[in-house]
Amino acid sequence: MMGLELPIAIFGWAKPVPVNPSNYGNLKRDDIFVSMAGPAMNVLLAILLMVTYRLAIELPIDLSEGAVVHKLPLVAFISMILCMFNLIPIPPLDGSHVMRHLVGMSEETYMQIAQFGFIILLIAINIFPQLFDWVGKTSFGAIQLMEKILMF
Image (cartoon, rainbow, N blue to C red; front, side, top):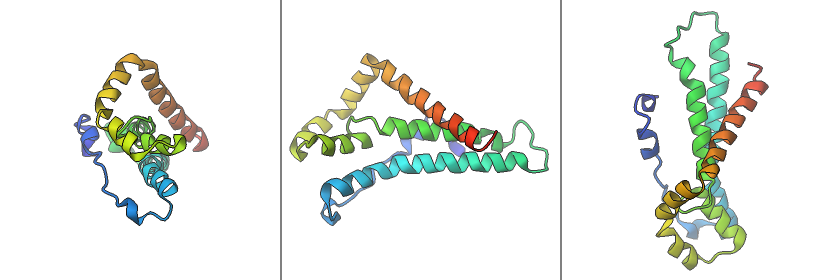
């Protein structure tokens, strides 16, 4: 919740988790599972935040406008944005691992591309702004769906 006051710090929290692929039983499948763990947790966090918000507003207590509970949908939205953003198939984002296995890219080719991943990402943001509009719109749609399911 501290990140709400310093929104720029939110992106600094995302650190790659070291994994040892030699522990995988099935390299492709397990790498996809590990890569999808982060985005899946973002979705679960968003759901948990929206359920918490729904329960909190049903409480028979006065929640003033400044209460932290009113920021929960915003945090859920940010979590969904991070999920969708991480699914973009550009290294070092999680979607790149999934795409690599789906198209059968070699580790060597992937690593050659990955060394320029951040630059590719910056160029993509400037050349394809619609892609990043899609990230926001899809995230907003997911939050709206959660609201409908929870009967707001």
